[in-house]
Length: 453
Image (cartoon, rainbow, N blue to C red):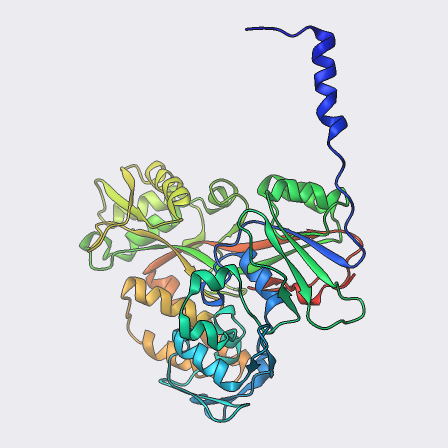
């Protein structure tokens, strides 16, 4: 190995630093935002916080108050008017056409534009969750051009929304894009510079005053975040949760004691810290929202888990299956289960057909009803009286009663345990002192359109 003279090595070490200028502070009228690469910028395909952040500037969502119903079966929606960034008008037909294409989770049998300002939705079953559902990105309006062309890849590179900001040029993978404000408003940024990069580096840039906002904080910065950004950080729940789904048709899992054994063998806190990289919390219940009661199967109790597995007569090797995106935490979970229960648990990629072991899944849902629908679809669970409980919760006339009834639904899910709750996702952001009105909303995150300079 050739060794450079010390003097020459010292000179070479200085040269890069001397030739690399320090990053300039943000412009007074420009909001600079650091984010990872979004998976998609098509509203119906948004699955990550980066995509939701960009959409918050490009689109104006429907307020919950825009949807009303006398019977929770037929809904009248009066969405906000305006224009898309391509100059075409945003009408009730824009929403109706979009929802018929992407709004399957509404459970609607009819979606009709009554006139230019009104959409009528007729549901298959009464539901009070419609106003909350309509605020989700999947229900943002799409212009007629993409609804006709169905060129989703092209639209993801150059999305056309109806919000206060528009793309100045198509999205550049690995780099980002610039947004410009459609109409001036005092205190609001005239431009938003979206920069794709490493979350750790972006965190440091915000701390150094070279970036205004970072919308993801890596796990290694979580402890420092509270000191570095004491009053300039936010955390919020994400519409994602991890479950271990049991094969209820498999005789080995018929006994609830066995399902409880698997659930209580899981060390959720270790999963959240380890393979989930502090981007999730240990699950405390089965449905979104705070739960006042104890979630017994959410507790980590290896001794009780082993006793329950023995009580249920479970022995021998079992598989634990996972789909795309679940491998890291599923493999770690399999190791935990094997260590606690004392028999081999082998993590394997999911295959078509019946599975001979539990399945790790991620559920994307912002309302209790959406989570219940996803879990029943994944497990085929139909316990005694469960359908009636779900129908009563969904059709409750007000939010408070609906929440109470969904807790009864959750109690049955946690008692019969067709799926064990493992984790719930959370988002986090940090920002510079020059920003004002930085607000995070549950399941949505930071709204860029709300930020002031």
